[in-house]
Length: 304
Image 1 (cartoon, helix red, strand yellow):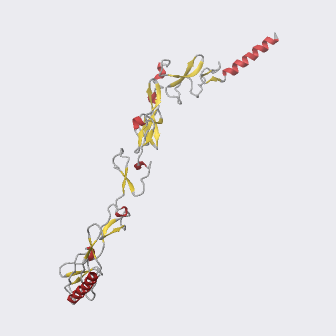
Image 2 (cartoon, one colour):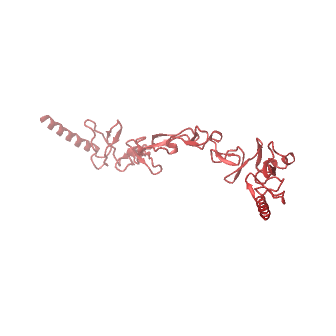
Image 3 (spheres, helix red, strand yellow):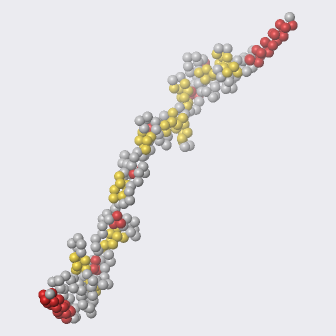
């Protein structure tokens, strides 16, 4: 008899302990003394959950459980109280409350809205990759999977580097222009090459710009009426103070001036048979000396 009493007492204690703890995540078994005990997330009995919008703490299968009030098992009187619209940033989708806002770099995005960093999109409160809907940043193409982006190939996107002497050219307004390597412009790269009377000037452009050399012998400046070009100094002198000299053919068919002298020296001779005259004092004497020298060389050549 005593054993039976002790056994009944032990059984009562076990039932009491079980009733005071949560059975599992599927519900809470309330002790007989507290039939209104809260659910596992702390939601009071017959109240809407604040952690799971659309759900309420009700009795189900002998336990207090969080049940979706928007579904077929929902209680009509609680459906309006637990509606998704009562929770900021949520909306009802197929009988479930779905989060409709995301945070992207401090900005709030609505569900389905693309973020500032492509291909990110706000979906059910999370930022996911969706290149098919949001596209990709410049230099990338949507991957066939419709989610991620693949980098385009071209010198514009630095996927390869142009060789020496060439540079990458592209239309910055066209994201489909990947760029192409073309010869660099400028006389440093011989594009174009400078003429005989020009220098390659890099003072304002590292690639070089062809500029006419200073001096009247290069046509910079040109001498006006009553002036002659002193090809030693490159200045335009008054007639009678300087002499011009014949020009010497240069490669490419152009003509470059030869070395010059002033009126007190004999002018340099051009090619045989093309003597030039100078309208300066002593010019006649210089011409005679030139002719005499020419005669001596010619006679010597005939004797040989």
